[in-house]
Length: 326
Image 1 (cartoon, helix red, strand yellow):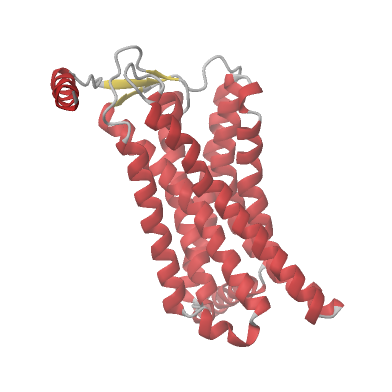
Image 2 (cartoon, rainbow, N blue to C red):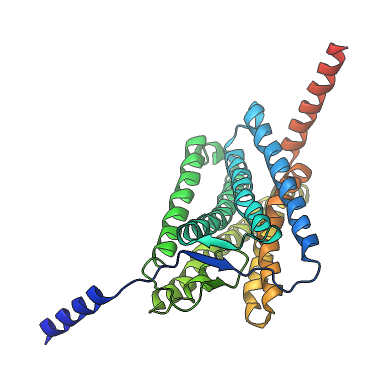
């Protein structure tokens, strides 16, 4: 009997033809009044993101005082924000502002991979920054031993490897699907959920992975961050005075604001996604993707003393060079 079942399964799969369309159509922001103003708003946020994160990366590269383990993670976050914004916003503007809604099958999968890769890296990078703050406050005397440059480089590299593997699995499960119903994706990019639900063969593995992956990408990192701050709070309550607590809070405030800006819009959107109108969900998700990269550098400039000092040095050198030229 098992032999007959095996032969039947082999015959079934040998006769199965996978239908891969030449292109998909991204429906996106359809039916939204005055939507061109929204595209302009996205473009402004994109320019802000590229300029601000570029400045942060340049400061970290040029200022020797910023070549510390913490700022390796900050540099990586800025790099990820620039890449993520550059991968998303120009494509969105080209797709909808210039009405180029067709995207080839292979480009769609590539687009989906890189979008979720950046989303994953942003989340994991916040975990690395929380680990840095946890060690700095709870083990200040051992900080330089525990969080060395080598350790931070290793953590950042591990995050990239994990993110790549997770998203290769995600995209890899789309490849066996046949698309014989529709090629219209109800999102503003090649979104994994709306994409695999167009398939006409069994997509249960995709359903499972769409439930499992958010745990590793969003919930597990957020849980680690919350636990790390509970540990920080407990350590400060035991060993620190009011002045030391305030100083520690200032060192953590920038990271806490990054966590809120990144996680809150995504979690709220996913929590009420079933009750949200389609266009409201699309706008909410697009804002969640473009606002954090535009605000992250401002938060670090305004909240981090080392970045402020580095900027002052740059402006001072610029003034001195102008005076010397005169």
